[in-house]
Structures are given as structure tokens and as C-alpha cells.
Image 1 (spheres, protein in one colour):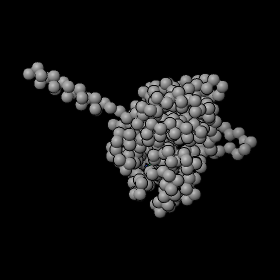
Image 2 (cartoon, rainbow, N blue to C red; image 1 turned 180 degrees about the vertical axis):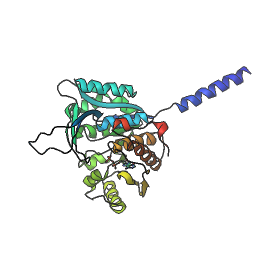
Image 3 (cartoon, protein in one colour; image 1 turned 135 degrees about the vertical axis):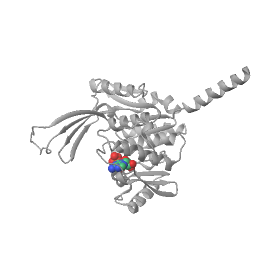
Image 4 (cartoon, rainbow, N blue to C red; image 1 turned 180 degrees about the horizontal axis):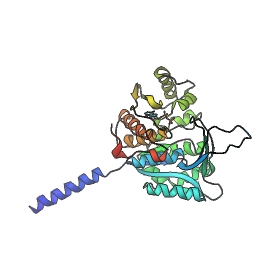
Length: 321
Ligand code: ADP
């Protein structure tokens, strides 16, 4: 009787350990504060316009993707750099409230935290200037300090809002430990083949896919050619996100179009970031690339029905395939 009871307790404990296992994701990237002014129209050079509305939102592709991965179920370490100022401290508070490990968010004593100055007109057209500030000084030495975390992680997720040398170095370290590197090549840049060979899956949107392949992505046929051309640079897996159409997937030698969910779209800001965070969580849980894209489509579809970037990111319990 007592032995049976002990066995039941042991089985229960084991089941609990399995069910509470969360994938470990290290996100390496930027932290910005978006400062947005909405006005009837955008000013021409030299002009001042009165009557705008101002609001401030936390942002940065790195931060958005770290929050997406955390809300969708991963144990996230965010490697980033802030300035010694109020914006940086506010950002840290947000990450802590999202249960993100902030141990490797470094502080640059000389640069301000990154900001994006965004003007939006009544048609939703915008103009944006990003001052990366401290994000620009996230260095190879910083990556070395966080090497243990990279070693423990299931997946490393990066974008291109930090110095490219740092991104390339982090990919080399990740590969040394056999970790999967997921790259969201945003903002669009050209990248060396030697770096791309260290990437497990690349997640460009239409513009970034065009930058990498030289092929304008307008439909499935051109997405196919772009995915093929990007793959020829040495990456096995290419997922081109196509906004409301979903994503075009190249997995080794197989090509598939995975449609988006049909939803009432309110604001697409940060949809790509939710997609990247969600994709990484699902893949790191051991699911297939196709299932991870479906999960990412479902999570991003929820985000576009809500206003804002970080505020629109869904939680795991909300995402239904
Ligand atoms: P980015 O935001 O980086 O420009 P996309 O516009 O390609 O990237 O969007 C990323 C993903 O977000 C898409 O692959 C899709 O899953 C989802 N998405 C974007 N816009 C919509 C939409 N209008 N309806 C449903 N899903 C969308």
C-alpha cells in the first residue's frame, strides 16, 4: 500500500517535471523606445505642424521578439544594451514584468538608450528615424560574457538592429555548441554567405527577401524563386512572411505555402516580431518547421487584431491552431 502510494507520488512528480519544461530561448537584439506623433499630414522639410497627438511605446525588434517568446511559453534570456537613462530603466522594468532574464542586458554609460522617432499621418503613412544609441554598442565582449547562456539554450534568435559583427560572432558561438540560430534579417541588409551558413532558419519579410535574393516578391511564384535563391546561399530553411497571405516555406528541398488566418486587421505593427518569437518557441519545443509556421501565423494573426506592438502580443493560451 505504502509502496503503491510512493509510486503514484513519483509518477505524478515526473509528469509535472515534464509538463513544466519550458524551452530556453536566447534573444540577442535591440531595445528601443518608440516616440510617435500622429498628425493630419507629415511635415515637409523645414516645416512645423501643430495639432499632433503624442504617445510613447516600448519597442525594438529584439525586445518585441523576446516578449513574444516569453508570453508564448519560453524561458527567455534577452541579451541587449540600454543607455544609463530613464528609457533604459523603464524597458528593464517591462522585461522583468514579462519574466525575462535581464542578467545580460548591459548598460552603456556613454550612449543613450535607442529611440525611434515616428511620424504618422491620417492615412497611416509614416516616416521613421531610429537612433540606435546603446544598441549600437552591443559587442563581441558582451556575447562572450553571456556564452554560458548560449550554451544552455535550445535556440538563439537574432535580428539586425545591433552591429553585424556581434550577430555573426554570436552565430559562431551558437554553432560551436550545436544550437539552432534563427535569423530575422531586419532591417533589410545584404549578408555574407559564410554567416548565412551558420543560420538554421531565416525569416525575412517580402522586402528583406528581395534584398537577399534580388527577386521582387509579389506572388507565390516569385516567393518560390526568392526562397530558392536565398537557400543557395547555404541556408536549409527559408520562411518568407507575406503579410495577410501567410508564409512561403522552403524546408530543405520542399516548398510549401502556408496561408495566414483570416482576421479583421486593426494594426500590423510588430506582426513580424510576433511571428519570429512564436516560430522559435514552437520549433524549440521540438515541433516541425511546418507546425512552427502554422503556430507563428496563428499568433501573428491575433496580434494584427490589436493596436500597438508589445501590447498586441498574445499569450500561449490564446493561440489556437
Ligand atoms: P513584417 O511585420 O515583418 O513586415 P509581415 O507583414 O510579412 O511581416 O507579417 C508577418 C506575419 O504576420 C505574416 O506571415 C502573417 O502570419 C501575419 N500577418 C501579417 N498581416 C496579417 C493580416 N493582415 N492578417 C493575418 N495575418 C497577418
